[in-house]
Image 1 (cartoon, rainbow, N blue to C red):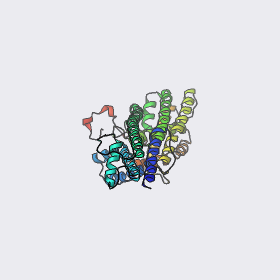
Image 2: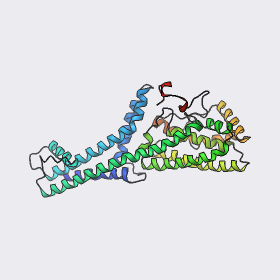
Image 3: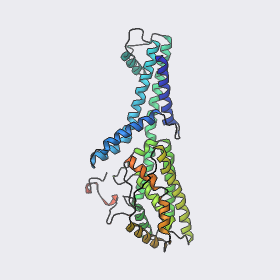
Image 4: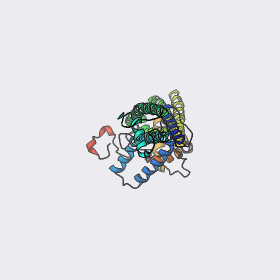
Length: 363
C-alpha cells in the first residue's frame, strides 16, 4: 500500500512539473500542486504585505516574491519526490526489516540527489531498479530546473525593454495624457502609429509569456514607479483616447485609428486572460481613475493633436474605459500595483533626469 501511495505521489509531482515547465500553454485544470502552492503562498505573502508600512520593507517584500516563490516551488517539488520515493522503498522493504522511516527518507534523498555515499543499498532486485529510476528522476528534475530559470529571466528582460522605451513618451510614471501631450506638442502624431504597433507586438509577447509562465506577472520592474501593469494601462488609455477623440479625416489619422484599435484589442486580451488565470474577477464598482478636470485637459490635448475633438468624446471614452478598467483594478488589487493616472503631475521629472541619490525610491 505504501509503495502504491508513493508511486501516485511521484507521478503527480512529475506531471505537475511537466505541465508547469515543459508544456508551453496554460493548463486550465484547477486542482494542481503548483496552483495550490501559489494560491496559499501568495495569500500568506499578501497577508504579510498588507501589515507592513509603506516604505523599503514593503517594496522589498513585493519585489522578492517572484524569485523566492519559484525557488521554494522547486524545493516543494524535490521534497515531495524524495518523500514519494521513500514510501516506495519502504513499501518494498528495500532496506530490510527494522529500518525507520527517517532512514528511508535519508536513503531516498541520497539517491535522488546522486550523492553516492554507499552507506545504504537496496537489498532486493526491484529495489535496485527503483533506485535507478529515482536517480534518473533526479537528473531530469535538476536539468528542468536549471533550464527554467533562464527562460523566465529572458522573458522578464524582453518585457522590461519596452517599458524602458516608454519612459521618453509616457513619462517615468506612465500616463496616456502625458504621451498625448508629448506627441502632439512636438507635432509627432504621425509617428504614434509606429509606437502603437510596437505596443501591439509587446502585448502579444506578454499574452504568450503570461499564459505559459504566469509566475512572470509577480516579477516587479527595476524602478519603483514602473510596472508591466502600469505600462499596459497607459497603452490602453492612449488607445482609448485616440479612438474616442480622433475624427480620422486625414489619411495618417485613419492609419493611427486603425492601429489604435488593433493595439487596444491585443492589450485588452492580455488583461482579461490574466484576470482569469489569477482568478481576479473584474471590479463591480470601479473607482474612477479620471477627475472631471483631467477629462477637460485630455479633450484639449486631443484638440491640439488632431486639430479637433469629437462632440461625443466623453461618452465614447467612458465606453472604452468600461471594457478594460474593471479588469485592471481587479489585477492591481491582487498584485499590489498602483495604477497610473491619466495625466502626469505638474513638474514631474523622468528617471533619466534624476540620479539615484535624488530620491530614496528611485529603484
